[in-house]
Length: 390
Image (cartoon, rainbow, N blue to C red; front, side, top):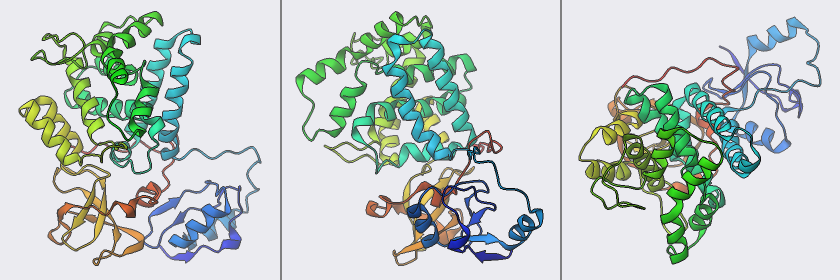
């Protein structure tokens, strides 16, 4: 493939690109048909180094096809769809009282998440792990989506039937119905939980069940999972202190707590995935759920920030059959200095083995995921990526 540098004059803001744009290594940045929506986006693209395949340019010229209709709208970026999912969940919850079939709407939303995850599970996990730019006031809704993602992975690993998995996912999305906004407030406050907040937290499982029943939800598994998701078999949970806890509730509690541990708050830093898994494994005594988390996420899940034996700082972007050796994208050179282009490495190779997690998170604040994964189009436009075997 012969690459030529993309001339600024050939890109028209708001007009679909006639060819794909790649970086110097040939990794896809923008698919043909994508629109550059602003001068700022174009500046950022050109600063990274943008190229096009010379043969593709010639082929487009030979086609001499008419311009696309003005009404053409390119498919959305997969990262944009994930971002939109949080806003869509909030809209669904806010309109709960006016929704005729709330249960059906939640199931439709759950199936939408399944489609997004199946397109590329590594991107789904990346979004759960990398939360530097998370907005605290949205915490309740993003946490629900992230928990639902882990619930899908756990249920599939445990080979649960689809109906049972969907009940668990719907429970994850609605377990905090009565405290979504309170969660956002608490995530952003720089003081410990207040007594009034603690009381609301203690009451939320029963309140969520009541709200769902009023909305016409009759799925017993969905409701039981929410009612019991803070109970523990030893009786130390809440709100009832029950020792009889259904399997779905246990799975939901594991996913809920794990995602909470790796999410940043104003009063504390997020735990690393490794520390969160370690705590889960100790509590679960190496049971099937903690094992499933490790098997699905890997020791270093997508989004983990690591230092390689080469000295490069990298982001994990893809799981492999080896839970300890994922594929990474380096964002610095061997001396730790940022580089304009990411380079992928297989950490199963000794010279690129992961040595430790990295701490210099300032490098990540303005790192767009498109730089690591390319501008991936929506599932309806590309084939679903295969899930890695474990």
